[in-house]
Image 1 (cartoon, helix red, strand yellow):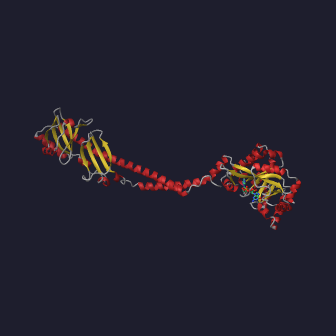
Image 2 (cartoon, rainbow, N blue to C red):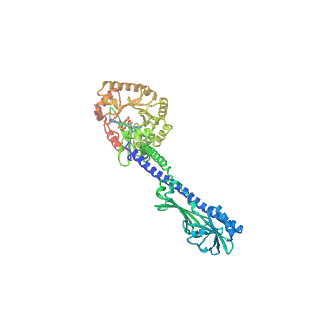
Length: 526
Ligand SMILES: Nc1nc2c(ncn2[C@@H]2O[C@H](COP(=O)(O)O[C@H]3[C@@H](O)[C@H](n4cnc5c(=O)[nH]c(N)nc54)O[C@@H]3COP(=O)(O)O)[C@@H](O)[C@H]2O)c(=O)[nH]1
């Protein structure tokens, strides 16, 4: 059968689906890796922030403790006690007593005051939400520090100087260390500390991961070069891609296979749904008179584009795909509708249809045939079921019972392709049919091969014994007609009278033939 659309090539489908799956795999793997990276770097940002918060908590607790012990003054004893306190706490570098405006009164390590580049006025310090602490940057030579101020009373306050830079070290994974920067700043943007492996080398295009503290006016940022993120922690990429590509190939193969299988059958289904299967009518005639006494309907597929598809191009697929049954009912319905007036007018006229063994043996076959013929108001006696034997009739007993049932209802049954199909002599007898149709093969050779004459005579003899009629198929010459008559064959079919014709042409032929007189018919066999 000619498929309606060109077959989709396996290679093109596999290529396209591999490409699509590869693209989807790339997007999914990349997005998964980016998501994982963002989660990890977010966590690291959180760690930096938490370390700084802990340092401030610790400083606040230290200042509270000093104030609680009455050490918030500049007496030598207090300063000595504070020095000891500072010495025991590594992040706290100094503790200072300041005035209400923030100016320094004294320092536990007064020499550290020399490191200061400047000092912030209280009004410029950043307040923290719940703790009452003030935070500010202490600009120093050799690196900035964080000042944490706790008021003692309305005149004095204690300030802890924290070295927060250490909380930024060793936080980054080794692969990223040389390509990243860790920053700590007050929320107003003033930088408190930064860590970069090579401070002289500026980062190229970088992605930032930010986090702000909920408790203190603090923000940390981790910046990582984009180029290094493309490879970091991306081990999952190639396995994911390999899986996606394999799935793409598999999907392409399955798709092309399903399309290959579905294409022509779906085409048949569309043809059936549109009623595109039509009967062509080939006359069956009396060999002696040439009178048309019946016809065989043969399927043709009349496609939308006007082309006529011959049965050999779709019958095998219709049989193997189980569509032959719907197709048979479609052409029978159409033939009955067309021929009904003629069948009614000539009660001896017979209409033969081809039925494959599987259809004959299928459930409901006899009932459907009966109701179709009844609905067309045609007598069952005028319908001949030709059992084609391209497939073997493997359940002869059941077939014989169906044939009996058909005959009980008045239908006639013919065995088609006798002599070349699976119809052995025992089957001819066992099936209980009314007619045998001698295959064209014997008609072709009857005039040239004496042994063919013997076989045909033997078949005629057998048919007579079994009370069957005989029809010869494929008659093309007058010589063949004469040879068949001398063997005892009375009916035939073939191009000598007509090939299968569309209904209009067939009716025309019938009318012409009706006017042939017995005399002129005799010319046919003279
Ligand atoms: N199950 C069904 N099978 C069907 C149906 N319609 C057709 N067929 C089968 O398809 C085969 C081919 O059929 P088609 O091309 O229609 O050929 C038929 C005749 O045209 C051809 N024929 C008849 N006389 C002559 C002739 O003198 N010379 C010549 N060269 N060819 C001739 O023979 C075919 C009829 O065969 P058969 O059915 O065995 O009587 C064919 O096997 C059909 O059976 C269908 O609806 N259902």
